[in-house]
Length: 294
Image 1 (cartoon, one colour):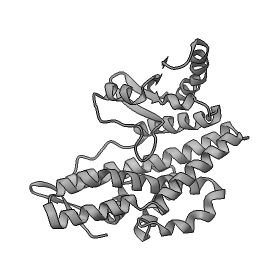
Image 2: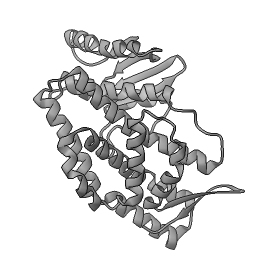
Image 3: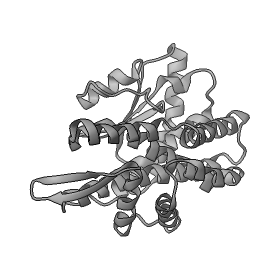
């Protein structure tokens, strides 16, 4: 495995490379070994990702600040790590949790089934359902692995977990930006343009942020008992109702059973999408989205 570090002085670079041997050791410990070919800590996180992906639009600072990115290249997986991970405020346990989270994502790429080639609606539901379960699964598994590797946690690690949970919780319960944004786009669709493609493009970021807030927050609650008492407060969220709870319970069951076959959850996911004003349908001309009131 190639390790490239573009930040720090010579001594710091060697220290970072030594620490990142953890990723290689973990990748090889899984059988068959994970196909992680290189790990890069670039001087410019966003620029490096855009270059490797042949894109110009990637931004790590969005609603959440991304600390790592997995990119599949012809020769295998490249993991890009933010240089922010190696600044003051971070310690080895905190970074290890990030490494573990990304490695679970890599493992899931191999474990999860290939995308369906059925109807456009089924394809969309399948892809998005697995994307959200992948985040839930990676959080819970990385938390479990961190507990095994570090039975005694540093104060910084505990504060890190508490801070992450609080951030997702507040974003989910108190910040209505995503809900208000989708409602505004529904109004624009009804009264201005009646363009489904425009509606989906304008609500994509709201859905991505809100849906991930949901799975992240519940993954913390489902692993850390100290957060369990906050679960009833999640009902204050505009996006939490029986449809949401049914999907989360489905994720919980699948995780506990180590079951990666989510096909029996496609209908649950279709209902969940209604919380965001979306109901998809196959038509002769292609995929269509009914825009629902929320």
